Length: 378
Image 1 (cartoon, rainbow, N blue to C red):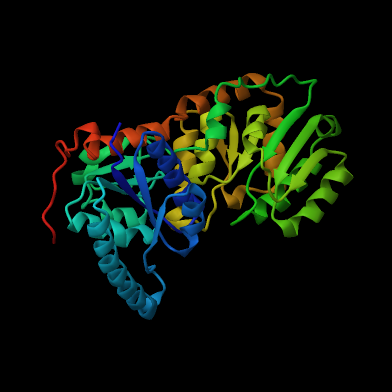
Image 2: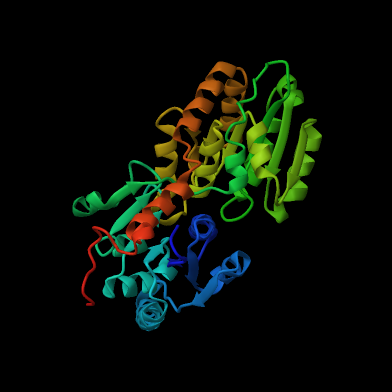
């Protein structure tokens, strides 16, 4: 389709930035593009797993005090110079960035060279790095229709693509919501085994232990928890007579999501996208320490249609969660409506739509760059 054109992807830092970059890379390679992955130390494993051309660029992170910011600016400047040399050599047809400070040097260099560029924002709030880049790039791909932090003059660049999800998630898209029969097992999936997940690992078992005996015996729980919380959580469930599988990692989350009647989760962009893609009702507990409280914006965007119930950390007590679970478990029709609302927001073809955008910017099979303006080097 594309004659082997090269697309450069700039991503690094956390999985929230890296996973959509990986999904796009796979879609682009399936279309015949070559992919170069430009990243930091933490992103190297992703590039190696994909088997694509891998390059590492220096990048600093602002916000660590005056001295730390000075070092970060210096690192960013060095990284931008290095990225410029790299991009001149690679001559990519398009450069796509996925937010986070590791993407900034490459994207700054790409815009200065006049290359076709886009950034992808996973959250309902444009991140700091993407806010810096937004005035400079040609297109801004967003995951939520309502995305805060976008300047009025940049809104014409917006394209809603959604946040790419794993192929295994997409395969579960067609699995219907399981009927929540009041006399049958009630399956609850709790996701979150890493950053900020302590409150889920401790509060959820305590809440479920407070439920009445009939509901406790109906529960079929699968919970991801931090390794240090596993023993206590298992003990609490066992003492309460609740059927529960607790582990620090599940390698079959898509299947578990599809079979769940209810999900309890943080409101990270990837988690919300996967819940929506399969279409399951959720209780969302935004991570209070997330940068600029962006998880609360994700949760509100998802819950606005009735797909979820939001419980901020300061309200996420065992008693409050127990009351919420009791209410939801006796309202199968309400759960089914929430599942339908969640599915309506799912964008399982996000990687495909993002690749279409890249293809247009790269000139498709025609070898030109269409209407995308090439800026003179600054």
